[in-house]
Image (cartoon, rainbow, N blue to C red; front, side, top):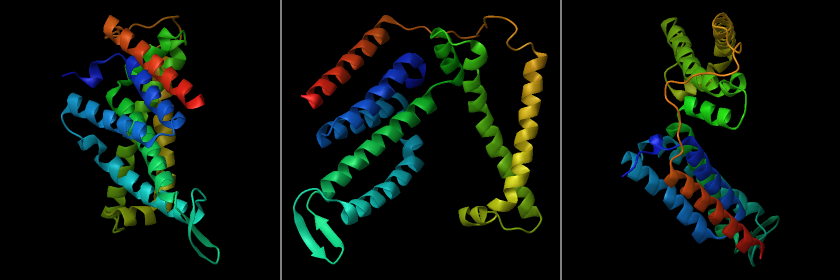
Length: 243
């Protein structure tokens, strides 16, 4: 058993890029299905549950149904099965839809897995190891911390509107009342950004050429070997696809 969160961020980024690039390069449904299975297995081995993929899986199913309809109407792969006016259905629309769905699923789940299981401060250290000045690398954790704050602010706006008699409980009601929530949300975002900028400036941010971290990332030899194997594996898939 291993903990995905405890792995080096460079290994997790390489794993994410390997999955995404291999899925986009390969035209094999079997290989893409194996890659999707690897994501699910790695999540099960690490977290022992797939609850973090629940909402994303529902969205992927909705997107997959739309992809199927689009390929059914506009797909031109394979033999012509049915024709009625402008509607022409070809035999390859199912295979094309499955391949597109697998690719979308791999890209979405791998990116989501990397974002959920990678600490923002580890991302910043990874960028610093790549000789990016820390004043720019630290923008990653700042942005990562900003979104949850804004979600809380939006929820407080919805609660305020509900207290004033405006229904804002269901998703449909929130979408309907979104125009009335945009302006106060923008005002709060500007206020929080101004407070964060002032706080950073008062702490002398960017004055020193380096920055200390409480927990430093360290690439272990096994993780380095895994990165090399992933790069070689993608090179093999790329060569096989080209040839």
